Length: 80
Figure 1: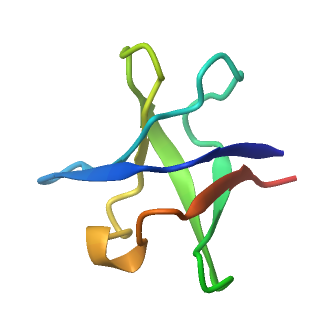
Figure 2 (figure 1 turned 120 degrees about the vertical axis):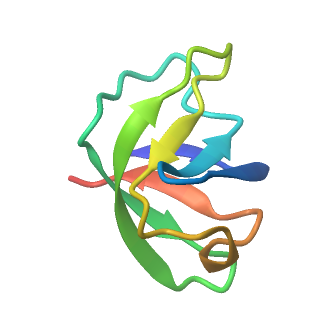
């Protein structure tokens, strides 16, 4: 299931990469596996490690994903 196309990223030292604008009102939980589809159509896989309390419910990815790994415009999909 498609979650969102992210518009910005923030690296939190020691925690991981936060993606915004977030999942909105879609139901997700931590430890959910996600697929990231970059604008060049290459794929990366990660896990949701946290969900923000901001209005968009930004998500925090596992610390192995770095800001330079995922350009703006990357799509976030839930894994089936």
